[in-house]
Amino acid sequence: MTDPGAGPLSSSGPAVRTPQRLRGGVLGMADIAAATMANVGPAMSFFFGFAFLATTAGVASPLTIVAAGIAVALLGNTLAQFSRAHPSAGSFITFVGKTFGPVSAVTTALLAALGYIIAMASVIAISGGFVQITLHHYTGVDLPWIIWTLLLTGVAVVLMLRGIVVSTKWAGYFFGVEMLVLVVVSIAAIVNNRGHLSFDPFLPSHISRGFKGLAAGFPLAVYLFIGWENSAALAEETENPRRNVGRAVFSSVAIMSASYVLFSYATVTGFDYDVDKLAAAQIPFVEVAHSTLGVLAFAAYLGGLTSTLGVLVAGINSQARLVFNAGREGLLPSFFGYVHPTRRTPTNAIVTFTAIALLIIGGWGLGHLLGDQGGSMNPVVFFTESSTLGTILILLVYLASNIALPLYYRRYRPQEFRVIRHLVLPALGALAILVPLYYLAKPGQPAPYNWFPYAALAILLLAVAYATLLVRRDPTLAERVGSIVADAD
Image 1 (cartoon, helix red, strand yellow):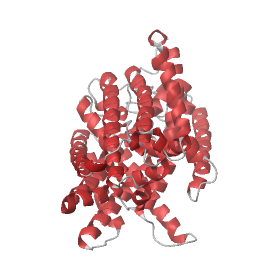
Image 2: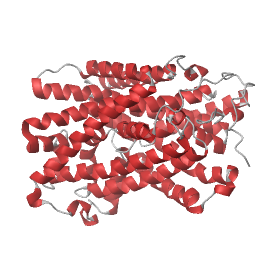
Image 3: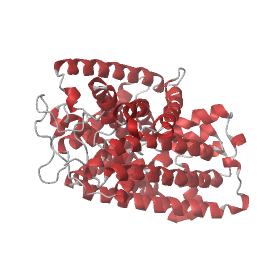
Image 4: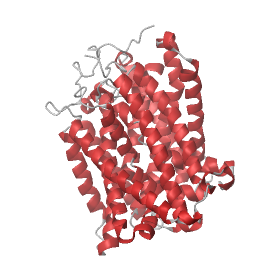
């Protein structure tokens, strides 16, 4: 059976009759791999996520990162196999919709859009928060973080609106700076502490509470990799996306896994394997940089700043394209499907995505002011809270994609179906997703985390209800889901 969605966009429905295309073939494999790793933002993610991970998993937290890297590679297989068969700027939305139908496509579009916007709100906030921390540390100046957030977000949006080539190259430059800083500091810390190096961080016996500690730390380690899927949404602008998207995914996951293991080993070594002391530090890696490099530790702050900028540009670039493609195919309002006539960028999707993320920050901050304890919102705390809620929604999308892969290949490409690649690996990927979902949703968590699962469930039910109504009103949606293939003429 051939894929019925591989043809041109249907003109019988209310969607745009002539679909607008992004600029095709302008990015190479190295470009989208760099953009993917910039979206992961290793400095930003590690700076603000590792202390919590070490507290949960203990000295052997690097081993937890290894487990997370394997799990993300399993998810990468699903993305690579779908992109090989049906490359699309819609990424997960297209893949799930092609398998399960238009209701699932609209539902996935809403979950992915909201999940990524909520998660990106945490990045937007921490970009200004990190500038505030850096300036206060070196100059004593303490300007409100929201000023820096608005300034950096404005710079990122301008870069994105100039075009995918310009913005992707800048994201790559930012990533290069942060990686150079992280690697230099890590190697220097390991050399500085060479007298008491140990293999303890890689021994299962040093994971706090054994398997329970590994399982509890696993979702935190997986979050370090969020953004690994960036390259799939850039498929339409990538040369030979059927080959290059998968290569970019696997190379990015491999590089990030090895890098995180290096950073984490350097950090626990720098704190002399004292997890309590590590957890008490505001930014553990920066503390290690101070103890190792002294005044040159400023480079670590510079790496964190370039990391947040890289995530802003690369993250919004790719995630807004999911929204754009959903608007182009009629799954979301057609307003999002607009492309700038000269630069070929999804202008409306980028601007709206960013504006909603800023509104979420404002609403969350207002909630802090009006809450029981009152007071202003701490961007570091908000980073953890907002990213957690967004991650729950994103994990649901990952889970649906892993379930969809074997069904898609059995239905549309039975001659290419392989048991290991298209059944066993996505099944393992689905199991790997269930672990962090359980620990993010289990009862007994402190506020506000205790209501996040209910919020996610409410969003899911509302998305299904909206999708069902939309499909009833417009039966032609089934024809338009995945109708625009990235490398089609």
